[in-house]
Image (cartoon, rainbow, N blue to C red; front, side, top):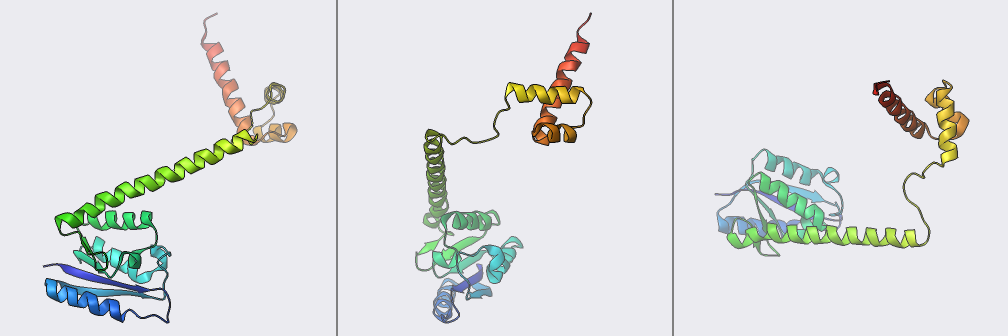
Length: 206
């Protein structure tokens, strides 16, 4: 017997969750599920994260405490609006041994065919990440073609020698940065490199 948590959500106060509640209650009765609690977010957008949907957060906490073994929702968009968020939710409840029922999509992960949903969504999520990465790389390539540079600019030999001389004269990293106009982080790296060279020289027998 499934200990079920029903999740209801509407985006505005003018909408009602009653239709969702009635249908899911009927499904639970036909399926022999035990309703542990009904979690309702009324007037909350599905685009908001877990921390902005109190009932959704309470639902996940109940899953983690293993108080419920089935989450029932009217449709997939009641749970969230983005594929990565949905995949994260599914992985989260699956790790706790909890199943998912979606009425509108006729999905029940307690069945063999329903469990395929996890694998399919993981594939689509990976595909989406690949597309995003490809777009980012293409954008960087176009920017480089226009002469845009990324990352820290390399110091010229003249500037590096100026920093080395100031360090050799006994100035602190902060003082050298002020004198040369080079960042403290870059000065620190140069001093570290100088120290490494000095240590190597001292270790060579005369």
